[in-house]
Length: 594
Image (cartoon, rainbow, N blue to C red; front, side, top):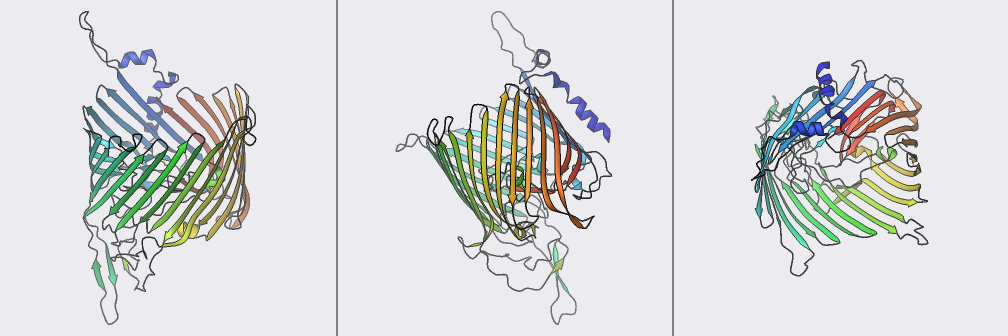
């Protein structure tokens, strides 16, 4: 089992001599297409373009009872992949090899294995763009279809089949897809079909600087019925009755959108509708799904503003109705809280609630105080404020029903086989799921010295999002100082403090990062909490999560060696989260892109 990993690392190291983004002359010579020249009619050589990337993350775990690490007897764990593409003229082919025989902590056992899950052949012929094999696709904002890859979250939702894009002229773009979605090392049996069209209208007579775009999409899933049933026992009935759940084999989803672009102003209105789709996510209920997204933004030099609203109800859309967690998702609802960038702001991340749904609002304003002004100082000062408020849908109370039991994991739901819990109305809102208010100040104190200050307030309903934990209110203060000591030396420091009276109480974090000669970087970090509970020790302890990393970057290559503790928590990106257990040990990461 070690041979595939050895082959992966060795066979992908051949571009190691490459500097910057330029392929070496030797490599170019090997890739040039054969062609001949005549004095009367010179023929231009068409090069063969070769691109690729390699990523490998390895962990040599150690047992730590204080922070509660998992079983470390399996030894070295790794997630590695190498992807290559070859393009000539209008043709392109590519593949990706993955090796994760012992996946990193937090990845379910179905990830274990190695192979070639991704391969494609693509041709761009005139107005046509045809892909056969594996491909990623998104219709509109992704409300009914978005397939993408996020390796740190264990997401690779690409489709395998046929994709055809057509430039019909006059600003009309059409895409058609058909295929099956990846599920770990195979594909789900459901067939996915889709059609998308966008029309960019010519300049409007009343507003020559404006541009209007109309779009519409359709996605259909064909999936055979599962053997899902429930058992009902009623008074006076000697023998319990088994009811078989009849599931629709075809599920259709539609999306329409209107976008307006002006020199300083942008607006988008998008609505999606999904038919009856009983699944594990919604407790095998038959309610319809819908999402409304409204987004406006304004920007000019020194000022920008963003305002968005979203309503989603029963909008989980999978290629496998019995699926859970991140695999098999066909759609993606845009997240509204900003992506956290500092360590303590990731302690309580919000995961988008597609079922039963949510009302979400977001606003952001950025303003730059002018240079050489009283408040802006010599170099100017950037100010930013943002706020996010997410409510649960206002739902009708659930009527008392007899508990059910059946073969499906969610068959204990008393609503199985019904339309599920319905909202009281379109604008009806329930309790607050998440609230975030933040202020950022970014100022250059002198040419080599840069200061960033931030404050963040969160209100997080841990019970509604994670299943238990109550409501958590946090106040986070952040200070970051960057000092360019010389041309070859830079130092960055972070100080963070999180205050809360719930959950594990207060947290503190400190980081020092030293960069030298544009190649080397040394990072030392510590997160401290005084109430870390250990199940093995059955007590709380004060814990320092110390970490150290040494990073070397040379041209296209990046190599990082690290050691330390990592706290348990959720790793989130784009409103999608994966739980990562506590870890301790040596880490080694290698990245190459060429």
